[in-house]
Image 1 (cartoon, rainbow, N blue to C red):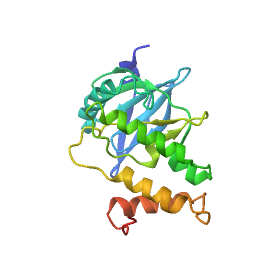
Image 2 (cartoon, rainbow, N blue to C red):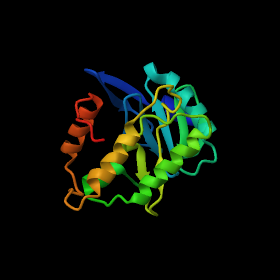
Image 3 (tube, one colour):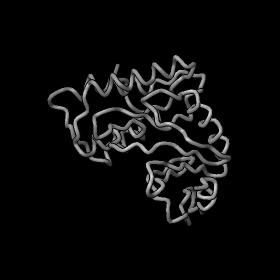
Image 4 (cartoon, rainbow, N blue to C red):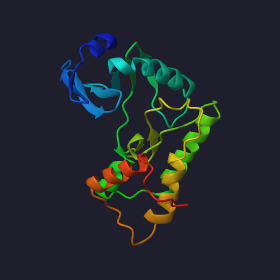
Length: 203
């Protein structure tokens, strides 16, 4: 299978400021949409093809180098191939922490500790884990944690996003009166205000 040909089969079009998928090979199943790329599961395999939009192709090379540095870290998917505008990596089955909250699936303290372990192992490789959010953390059917989307793991500035999420978990989520199922619109609203720096401090 030529992954480069699969990546080249992906055609986009702009609708306002949004990138919309126009065409793709029938073997590709769209499973994720981001600011810089679309992710497809390759049918009949346990692989994901991540194809970057033309303005963000430089991120493909950056993320590929980071995945090489993370090789052997069990908390991250293995990368199998990379090209000018694509990556091929393991497909991670499971539920993101974002969807755990939306669906009311319990999040355990052990999951938080596993994320901490994953990030510490990355730091020991000289990386600076950044942009750690609920949609990038997956709980597998076996209850293990996996992290995806590592493009910003070489940022020089300190990112407090994961620390903020941990504080929210221990201070609010574990409280018996905190709702364990949160509507998706509410989750999106909180994420929007957080990115804008409009939420009050929870320290």
